Figure (cartoon, rainbow, N blue to C red):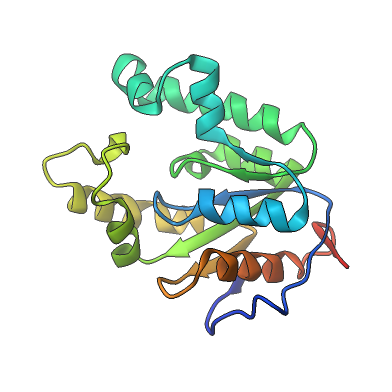
Length: 195
């Protein structure tokens, strides 16, 4: 895994280019996968897709409703099917749910057909972004901070298996994060042909 971090990126210096593989953003809830993904897609002139949104559309239910009615195992199975389908389509920026990369099947699919980019945010930043939202089914516990911390500790070693990693810092704007990701992608000519 190549790791980019430290220093504030220069938005003006981050070029664009032609995307050759789907970029799959992975990381914890609150890391910025959706916001950064939309900015990346715009900068690289490719579609932005969100695996959770695609699951909700296919099921005509929210993620929380799927978890409540069918359980997490059912949801994870549908998630793998959706990720596989989206990776077979045209190159895009694909934002995944926080648990998607935990599955060896999903990691293999992503590795075979795309490139994974871990948006690595620390626990304090993640908590600041998710603590007031009730749309996170895994945090519907008596102690949501502890739950988030436990998830963070368990998942970080798996996220570290991503092809590329970019630090998500509280001081970075969405455009700065998009520039950081583009800079990371530029280290992989098989993924991004820089113009």
